[in-house]
Image (tube, rainbow, N blue to C red; front, side, top):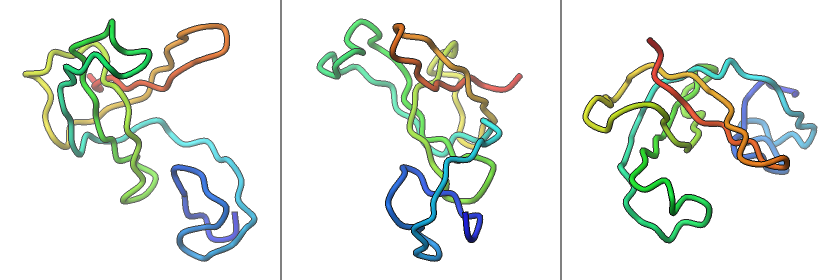
Length: 106
């Protein structure tokens, strides 16, 4: 809140200015793919039935090095490229759980 720097995942002190007065802020939900992998492991709880699926490291557009690890939906693995523009979608898994996923921007 004090310096405007985004910290993700959340932590007690700001990485930039060490302030303790942190708040949650909305972001645009847009970014670019920095890295990706096609997951084949069936031992990740909650995702065994999804194999294979794409995990992506997304750098959000709000600031450099503001990363989010998530899944990429609706895309074949051979069409994913580094620096590709993506945006968030929200997938309701249950009444209690909604996951942020990403899709490629058209």
